[in-house]
Amino acid sequence: MLKEQLMQVEENIREACKRSGRKREDVTLIAVSKTKPVEMLQEAYAAGVRDFGENKAQELCEKYGQLPKDIRWHMIGHLQRNKVKQVIDSACLIHSVDSYRLAEEINIQAKKRSRVMPVLLEVNIAGEQTKFGVSKEDAMLLAEEISKLDNIRIKGLMAVAPFTEDPEDNRQYFREIRQLSVDIKNKTIDNVSMDILSMGMTGDYMVAVEEGATMVRVGTGIFGARDYGRMQ
Image (tube, rainbow, N blue to C red; front, side, top):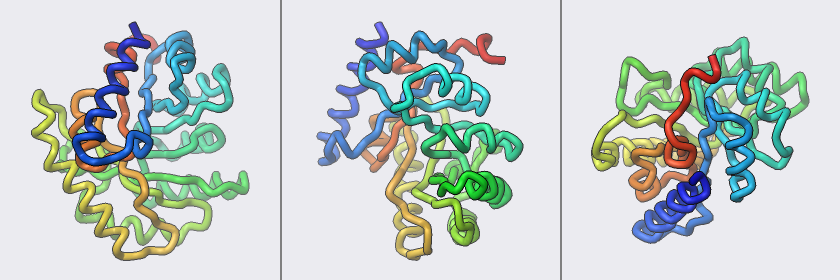
């Protein structure tokens, strides 16, 4: 079942790439494995998945210790400053930086380990009160502030579009994020690149790919519905 669902997601991404004149290798599929047991991740790994996304620092750390070391772990959920040290060694990319204070803590922990931590700025593109992320208007200023930190590098933007029945409703938001990334790139800020656009989830990842996503975060489409009772 999981393998078939994964194959369908892959096919959908290929089709979206074809429609938008892009190469399949330009898009990274991140399997969002939050609340899923290690056995399901092992099944996805056996099917070829190497990029996994977790929402909670503790869950990422626990799974990191139990699964093959060639997996690339993405911290995609809201990250509290006191949890940074839990993921600094295991995450390949932190998608959810939305404040200078969080970036500052990541910088401190990365410096202790003599590493430079790649991150994405999380942008609340639709201005939803229930979601984290810097506003579109403040993203440029935040990028400039964070760029001065020695052990952190901004690699692009991440966004969570609104939940909607029709994925076409989110096309405008994906276009806005892409344009924002162009605007920031054109400022040529030191230590800031805009190579990554992490946008699109199970309900709208095909539209996101058509609008320039370089990373899509798909959970339910691969693993099925989440079990919220597992990881409390």
